[in-house]
Image 1 (tube, one colour):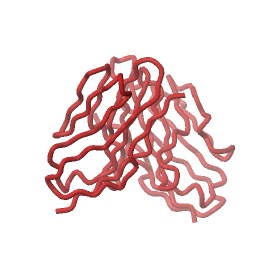
Image 2: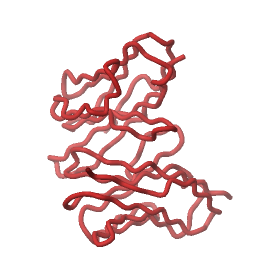
Image 3: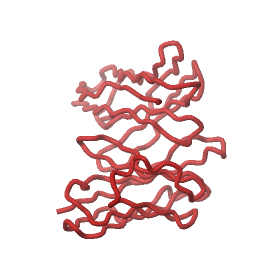
Length: 111
Length: 115
């Protein structure tokens, strides 16, 4: 079956540092890929998505590119802020019917 | 759009009691999902519905758990009897794949504590 693997962390960075959270997947066909973010005490929110190979999703300074050849969807941000501290989930779906989530990566950004 | 609505936001109960969690999906969405989140097991899919019909309930942990969706705007997740190991945050989510968007939208969650 489909699966998502991501670095579990926790990841601790200083403000303005560069962020990379790795995500790789195993799936048949061409799933849509997502990054969700969960702030403390809240539900998951969509951060960005990509629906086909070589697409780049971007939002709030975060970016991720759908790499079919390496089955990856790594999340990057050039300069993190304290307010980016949260748990980040990589996920995939075929046609939005069933989702497969990674285990989540906790990010802490220190001032 | 009010988003996915869950109630209650917090529930504290004693072992053996019945617990009912409620969810109102985004209007027009035809898929509804129930998840459980714990520190130990992460985010687990319990069950999901399409057009009010349960499609996959393989994630429901045991017979103490049951879920219903009597209409397109309401779903419940019931635990009877509850046990301390059921303590977790339960999320409801909805989506509308047929509408051209495959994004899943989550509610704020219900934090359940079973004493």
